[in-house]
Length: 126
Image 1 (cartoon, rainbow, N blue to C red):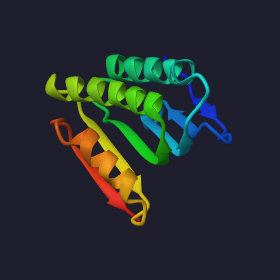
Image 2: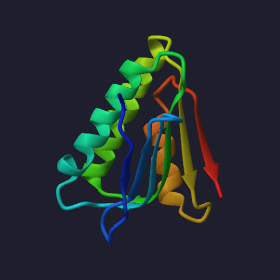
Image 3: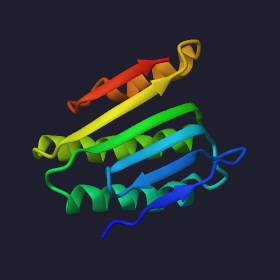
Image 4: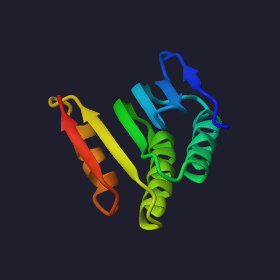
């Protein structure tokens, strides 16, 4: 059974919600935690469990990050690769990446991370 994960944002880490009812993994804020691997490990594990347990419901990665450091980008790539593999195996998945229209760097990053993947995604500038 998937558990709900809720992490309040800090100065260097994003607000995170992992909702087992909707199968949405949401990131909001900025991501440059001191130990990126330690921060993202339980979130990647949650995603792996969501992809393994629920076969019919869409698993959604909802990203609204205005800044990611190198370690956070690597962790995000790991999650996107897992979602892309699941999509190729017939699993319903979706990525929604919300960007501030004035933050060209984050729009470009989202485009770069998603361009080689086959999964359904939307980059929404707001």
